[in-house]
Length: 253
Image (cartoon, rainbow, N blue to C red; front, side, top):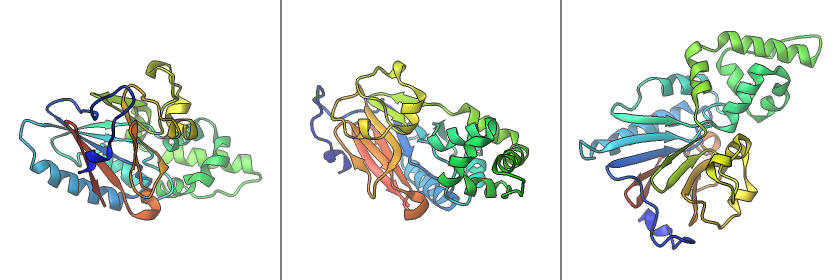
């Protein structure tokens, strides 16, 4: 059973627990793979159908909906629809959504964004590499093209993304947290970007942290955290962690 992978944690004598009467479905980094997302949603609906009628079902998406895969626009369209009837939904911000929003505010950000998969997002919105006299002008035209092509509902979705979500003994966040710092003192940069300091820490963080951002071939299960970014955009494996009571299990494409 997946929960057996948990040992004793520092200052904690029992495995973490989700709130009573709730089942959480945490979804890892999607990165434009609408094909995998629709398949995973079908599996989640099938799983939820066997649950007690009064059980609250909450889907928590850990961010990075866009970039790299070729269907970022379709992913956001799908998410703002109603793909999971009967589920409550929580959408967290990933570093790739942050860069996309930064690009809309400052086109020069595009220099880095394009090399991190932003080119695929632009193409999904019908924006190409415009010809221009110089790079700055080209990036400006591309930003203007994206701004014109971005549906208002998509911009509202991006602007509404939360930085983290707490439920019972779990903290859901895109990248992780800075060890030794209270949750209300965490910076957005750490919540969206942190790696080594968080990944290498054996400290108990007050919650078991469920996160994406850092790719592993299989879910990275530690005493104090669970990483579920399994590199969907190239591996074909999109991961959902199901949490109910003190149990943990997986649904994957």
